Length: 295
Length: 290
Figure 1 (spheres, each protein chain N blue to C red):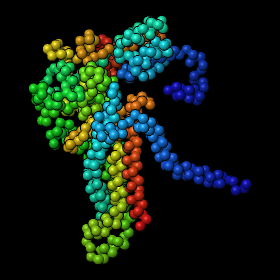
Figure 2 (cartoon, rainbow over the protein chains, first blue to last red):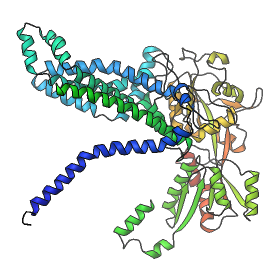
Figure 3 (cartoon, helix red, strand yellow):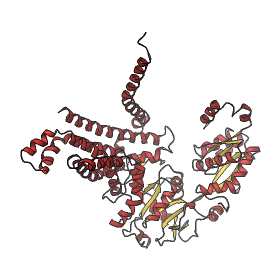
Figure 4 (cartoon, each protein chain N blue to C red):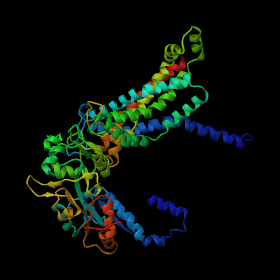
């Protein structure tokens, strides 16, 4: 009885709060998964022609004779994400090596803060940059009719994904024990050889995880992609073609869809696809990262 | 909204007494999704002018609104089409004589970049550009070249597939069962279409008349080759000569009385008509708005 003073109650309260915080991640992931599946599964099982979904480009959910071909949307998302990785991987890995291995003192601190600031720019601002700066620039530089295309969205998305990749990659390089570097230097390796032949191979798993998380970010990004791709159902044959992303399709169409309709279900089918792919990417990144720490 | 009000009542028991609420008249307004945002804007503006009347607006489609009006569950039905024969029949059986109000027009203009020399289109040509199976892919197919459009490609700009504008353009230009050609840039708003046309010499787009800017031009539209080519304008939309315009309607069960009559009169007043103009549709007559 005498134990139950204020400190005891505070202790219990904080314990409960921490516990709720701890399991909330699981609750939310499971909750979202159940919700998305519940809304979309009926449609997927009863109405959706799976073969058409993956092989046809005809996405016409509001037609009197509706077709639900998502191939162009999948290819659109993949092409934009692929180009984004071409842009962001060299940038992010270069930045991580510089911040982690070369920069010292104030430069290093300033760079870290700036990279984190870059990660905090809202995606609609990136979309706006794509729409108002990149688009006319692309038209001028390459003499193409429309500036809203794979190239535009890929570059924007690459710049968006780079900061988070830089931060994680830098952590991975930092996790490589200094003993490795010292040993390599003692053997007479130059600074470049130390980084290229010792530090990067040792931090490889962390770097792969960084890239995968960047891919996940790109795959799930919506607003900037909606604004910069041109939102056109199209299998791209060059970086100057407009495409449409899975996420952007959901964002553009869900708002005006009547609850429980086939169109509504089809958008949740896209949601299930997106959720599955990002889940797999993140899980892979996590497994890869775990292997680093165990070693 | 209702939740907010009742929450407010809980907090400020003094502020909203029972008597006050009993005097408040509620007008139920339901129907067309095309008219939905205009109807909401009207309801909102009207609540400022006449705080004793609340207009509750819901969408659901023209058909839903009309049948609710016939059954007496709503006071005013919004419709982007006239009532069909069956609906009129159903109304007569219920002893309801629907009264139609034309509250505005939805005129879709075709927009071209200012460099584009084309001044007129036929509906068939538009169908060739936008419709599935249509052959027009380049501007040279129409015997023109557009300065600044090196690739000669027609860049089709359309709307997202659940917009009323998308559905109406499809119905009026492509025909009931036809489909749009895939690969158009599908914008999410009437204004976005015009914005993109402004920046794209190769482009063609369709949108509400009210979104015209100095950087684009609107060709006239002829129903058929050799027929009269009509320039989209508020006047041609009102007189019905412009082929891609439809009246926006409201129906009441019998001549409106009391608060409903006041509301309908206000919608047709300059103030109400300026709101529909603001929302991108043509008013029923010329109005001067600030």
